[in-house]
Length: 420
Image (cartoon, rainbow, N blue to C red; front, side, top):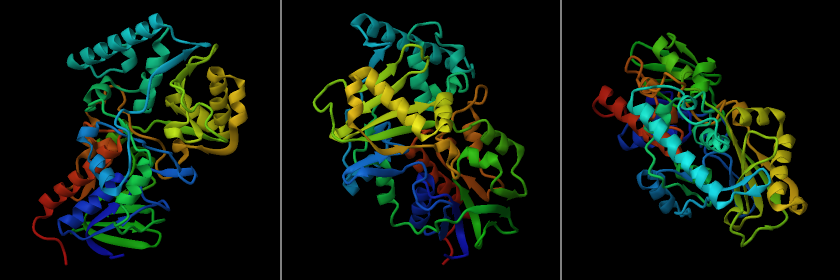
């Protein structure tokens, strides 16, 4: 790995990989360092068995008509569903909703959406919980679905995040795994794995990034680590980052969106229409979305977000699997448990040492911090990653676009051709 380059890139997730490709396209030399043993960041696919991929992180190509990964998926031969492959069937305290109850839930969703939009139009940068109906019998479902999309509970995230995101309502899941797609796309980028940046210093003519194994000098750096990593202080900056930068990172904290998967001995719901259900058990106040046999595969998956997701992660893998199986039994009967095997994949993004969470949510009163997080420091240290996107935050393609944006900014500052 060269130790004197135009651009030092820290982090080989979607943003770091796209920055590297953009630098190469512009003739800029670069070095890309990654603390983990793999590329992809929060895009990561494992397999329950051969031919049965399971995404631990991002899975949906959101806003598909504007998402560059759709063309990348086509180029690399990855299949995806254009219909979203998701229905919002609800099993409420022991039974599926009646048509009248479905209408009431739909009406609440529309009323909440109007209230959020109205608050944003009025310039209010308040919590979502401040403007939606919390008294309705159906309020827990809307709060839960928000916690999945934003990774934080509705009292901890601003209405601005709900309206600033550019949602075309085209959400296409990658059947072969979004993480596998990112890994295939990024395979041609040279990366120094297991190489954690420990210090980033401004020098007289650029930057120096220090790792345990040595240091790399560059004319500029692109930092793509998560906001929780920035706020943790695990990467030292010399001089220290300005207050406006650390404040931006602190007010865009990562929340939790975890996936709990169990392999089944066979798919017991093959051919059934209602195999994707949001479940609220008697005596509980947090729903839980369950899917059995996605794409015909023999596994089941449940998803958690926000505070409850954080609590269940800390409770451990066994507790998470038990939670999933109990909700499966509530919908499809106790017999479904006989198909459950001991092969499980349970994510724990909050405890992941290189991300410390899932994706960012702007706290109330801080809806404009994403632009601040994206601002460079001294035109030498530039920032990318989903949290720096003002319209596609919380997404893999949002991170991708910010990596390119950072290189465009660097090229404008450096001018001319890169080093030979």
